[in-house]
Length: 332
Ligand code: P6P
Image (cartoon, rainbow, N blue to C red; front, top):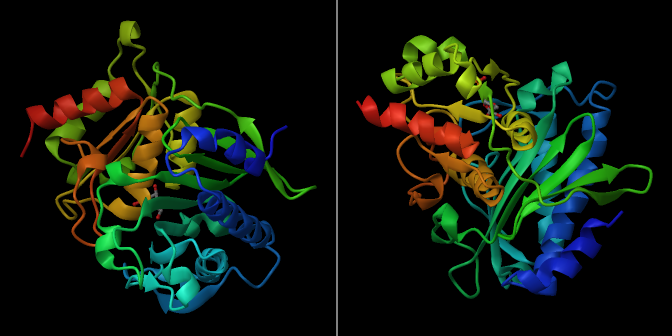
């Protein structure tokens, strides 16, 4: 079995930023993931399951593991010196490294250190999502402008899923590869080479409790999914874990569409463009799938603020295209 580092070294010839620095950055992310994995695995045992007593920019209670994961990734990237700034769901403002070593870093990172953390108590898979860009400036502290780049400028993105096994799935723009952590040796081993989203998806993932608040195009697409038409493999089946990384990972392997649409209450939906939608969209496209806000390609959206939200349709290409057809027909 090939280790993550062996794989990166072997494939970096295909990667335009083939430098030891990028290898170091991905390795730093892997190290932090292992530390977070260890804490998650004992969450039920340690008094770490409670609340930290603070809230993040979304006004959500921060669980201790949210804060622990954020600190792990920020520290790991500090000591690597490859990253000059990080936009994190857990930090209201851009996190910039003050040490001169990091300020020479060529990269900036947007991340959700522990997405779906409300599932910790019920032992449902949760995840870390990361997105990597080259900084625009040359030196000094990273700036918000370094992060406000469209997703089509990402040099890499990936996620860690802390589930029945812990996996690191990432892309540098040459396909998607998955690595499973072997805890007995503490190494991520290549277990899912060249991951592709199956074209024949028939799973849709959406929180239908919000149905009455959906736009008509979304409602009509859901009715399309539920119609009986064996020639198009319908009715589809529905699966919704309530953890983006887990729902996307399943659809990446089995095919399907995940939707978090806008509603009358929240026209831009819930998910954040920089550290949830862009990195997942990059992976989806690299695996042969699609990602849009219902009308346009996610990766072409020009961000205007660090924590902005966008409606999100991602997965098997023909399913996303069909959803977009209904959205266009009933554009409101
Ligand atoms: P709802 C978790 O909070 C998250 O950001 C995603 O991981 C997940 O898919 C979604 O929100 C769940 O949101 O409103 O359905 O509970």
